[in-house]
Image 1: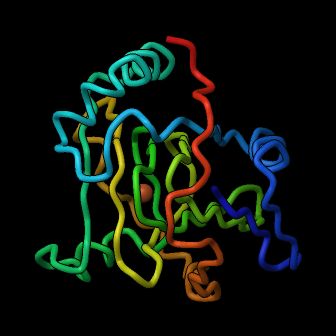
Image 2 (image 1 turned 90 degrees about the vertical axis):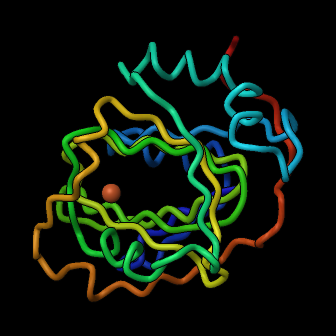
Length: 189
Ligand SMILES: [Fe+2]
């Protein structure tokens, strides 16, 4: 379950419906999907097969051509340098779409002069549209597994704004690092 915060306004939202309602006007899609399709230790191929309906539906909705599974943990080589590519404010030429299978991380979204943070965890699907200024980092346990969608893998390159805005926000995680409630899919097959 996600935690949405507007740090400067000291506002925090934990409710799924309220999070979706608050993010929609910012152009950010947020959904909760079922986690019970595969076991936590399923292979990437098994994950992609189990979520093939959702993957295809997202491709139709967003024009994505490819999906994969990213798996990051403290044993990932060059983890800190990898994270350092994305923890400064940037944009992409394509949408950043993630369905979180396990682990937690924080997207900071800088939209219309205001910064919102979305801490995502298991079962959360977030779509950050292309061109949105944002940055991302993992929670303390440095662990995340997620399905990603791509329109064009070349669009994944971060374009840094060098605004320095990211410097004034601490990546505090509030959610629990456990598998959240198993909710029904919000996408029809
Ligand atoms: Fe990004």
